[in-house]
Image 1 (cartoon, rainbow, N blue to C red):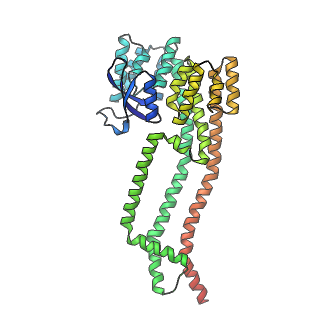
Image 2 (tube, rainbow, N blue to C red):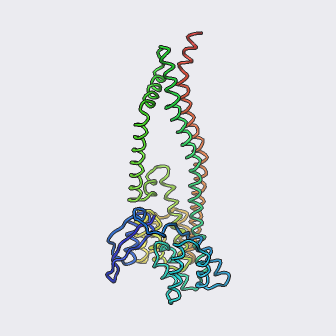
Image 3 (spheres, one colour):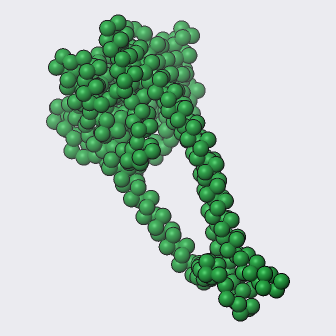
Length: 395
């Protein structure tokens, strides 16, 4: 999520930055870590964007195209010029133009990226800055592409597993609403003409169906008002504490969301360490990629590492590890391959999350279908119970 942050720079100038963070507290903490004094934070979605600035820029696609040009033997300036020539979007053309102008003036590429925080997040700027020290920009770009693809793989797995249950809920809810608002009132009219007493459950269903048919518009408006209120309250809660923090309070999801957050944290730290960024700086940059609760622990762990404590001990003290990843961290500290061990730990977590998603989907979808079948079947049975009762009396 993006936030516009107004801050006072060390030169006593008011500046506006766009920061990627989980919530307003994360945006504020990240900006203050860069040495600015924050005066105001607001979500970007609540602001009016200037004309021509609409449309998001895919950093993965930009990095892949630039990487291909650099591997082909072009310089960074030639590569950006080639991208500018083929680009039709006004916003990306402006971004590329500013980068080219700065490079021709002799500025560093990472500094130019940092001047456009609404497009290039601190994580991206950090790996490019580290690559400038080793003169290996293509490898840094490839590392970022691999990092983002791994995160997108888990996210897409979550989204795809939620599509089918969502369709079932919509279809099942639509059938139930149709039965109650259209079919039940017509059965009620037929049963009233018979003059027979009905089973009390059937009578309750028929009374509700008649009420829904007679007050359809007020019920629809009331449902829309409640839905808008819930949506607005949910967005406010997500903006205040973050979506992950809210979902983590659900008993069945909390432990698995923690594993997902640890996977993202370890993958981020591993990429930054392999890119040549010191551990303290990597932990500071990773603060913007985790939930507020985990960010507090990460900041405390960063303070412990700064004072000379090992990363494994700091993570253990702040509950930022599991028994398996703790052993892998200690092995990485002894062998000097801490970045690789962090990346392997993230891969282990990703595999665990994927297996849990598969198990949960296989269990949840049949249960959801059974629940919808029970609701629809109950409505149908209650509608036909008076008919069965009448047939029994005639026989």
